[in-house]
Length: 79
Image (cartoon, rainbow, N blue to C red):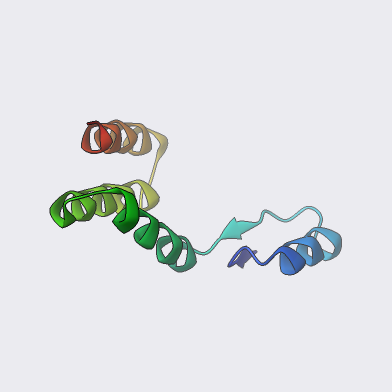
């Protein structure tokens, strides 16, 4: 099941489909992450790099790729 993190919906999913995995919608996560990034990361170019690196993590196809991309994300986010 995929949702936008609506608490009532998440609770209903757990009741009706207790064995199903619950995932959060990529679109809605990005919709929340981008404004937060813009508030705390400056200049805009750096924020764009952070968001690009974040997108690479979210789009991983395997564990090895994920680990590599998290390392790259940490480098982009380091002061």
